[in-house]
Amino acid sequence: MLKTRLTHPEILHALAMAGHRAKVLITDGNYPHSTKSNPRAARVFLNLAPGTVKVTEVLEALTHTIPIESAEVMQSEDGKEPPIWAEFRALLPGIVLTERPLPEFYKAALLPDIALVIATGEQQPYANLLLTIGVIWPNDAAHDKAAIIQST
Image (cartoon, rainbow, N blue to C red; front, side):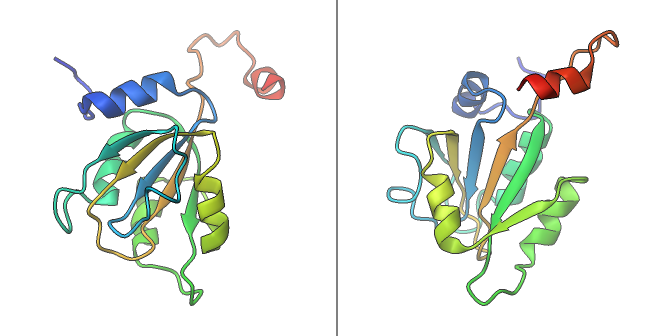
């Protein structure tokens, strides 16, 4: 048995295969997966029914499983901030949400560094999130974090 909050075998497998700076795309129920995501990425469909599973539920599980270095969000076409972004910020303290216009977000989602695409049944509009996996730092204080960052 696993002690982590995340127990989905395909998601765990894809995350284990991904490394530093690989990306995870979490999408809402309206996202065009077949045409606007890296076709080589692992795909997990959690969109059981409208509203089930939510993007924030997936995000919360991921925050307990992987280090998240950065997060990108899809801008609404009218420029207004979608309400779900406040929920993203609450789950990602200290991480600035980088806003991308719709075409730019789609372009980023097609790049080869997308390791995993997770489809949800989220109904809130513009609830798409592109996460960059960070580094798990060694507990050994002798390692110089700055030197490791410069070498990557």
